[in-house]
Image (tube, rainbow, N blue to C red; front, side):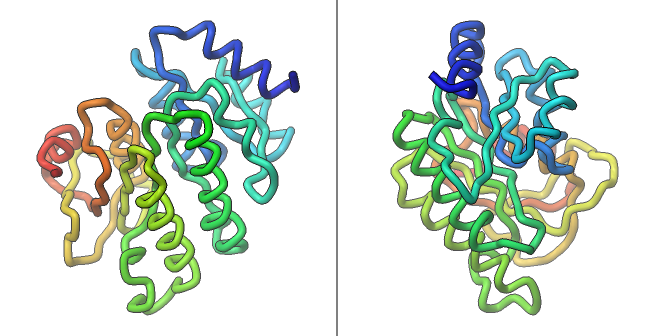
Length: 226
């Protein structure tokens, strides 16, 4: 048994009453917020997926388990002992096909093999019609293909499409619709909260929606999504 499998199996055995959540992209700005929210949850235990060995220490020092994985390579070991997945990884526009698209697809396949019960995808506004975008078309096309792959995977899923991400403090309030028909911004804090809230069993299943900063409490906004 390799090191990663040993870690995941230990997590699974230790947290029988809590769900183990794999966070792909845990070292990113939004990913770190997701991990911190999960760490403070009474329902979930985060497992941070990191790409480089030197990224492990920061999570280990905070008592958070990690799994080492490059989304351009083999990912099948990452979902062993995992209950649900949040995909918040991204290439920063450098390898959108290899990471944002194909990396997501590989993690979806691994999730199917290991019986993941919910896959929450961080996507982007514009991913529904990338050809209409004025910029970032390659990125949005990659996100579109990953989203469509998830929709047809047979996994229970939620696809969250935020507008432009900001580093403003979160408000805990959002505007949420399947199609908002407008552009705008939203804080990473509120995006992270929406993603984590989507993990709950009473959250919407098999759905895709857009979010922007707004006036509705995140939990309430999610409750009205069909």
